[in-house]
Image (cartoon, rainbow, N blue to C red; front, side, top):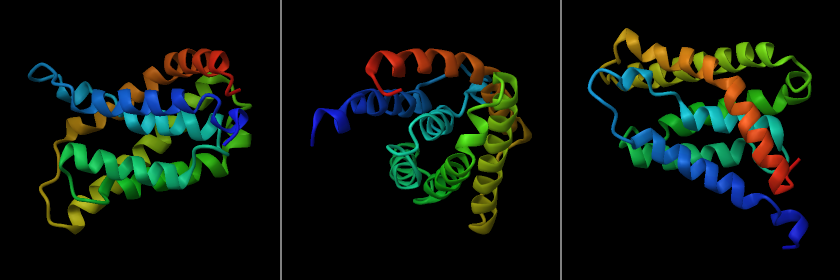
Length: 162
């Protein structure tokens, strides 16, 4: 592989590794519902920023890793992240020209869709469904998106990805 194809790939892997770690990081009792969907947010960011390097198959592999780390049904997050990545890659050229607040609404809708897919898988396997406060993570992701976007864009620019 040449330097042009591997340039910045370390940043993608590093940020996704941090996102996986943040998903299992212990949180104080009662605040677990406020944990953002870090892996889904970074999947969306990388699909919108570098869709030629990070797409559906990368999201599927990341979802399998998340399933293994969380101990959930194998394929549950792989399915939801794959569909999330597909929507993001297909709409990438439109979404990138949106103002940041419209991007945040788009991201929120995709986070809600990802949560619905996970609930569908849980219901199909007769697993107990989470409480209503599980939806708070989508709202936190909506509020976090502008900050995440600006920080990650700066990092991606410094790494030479964009």
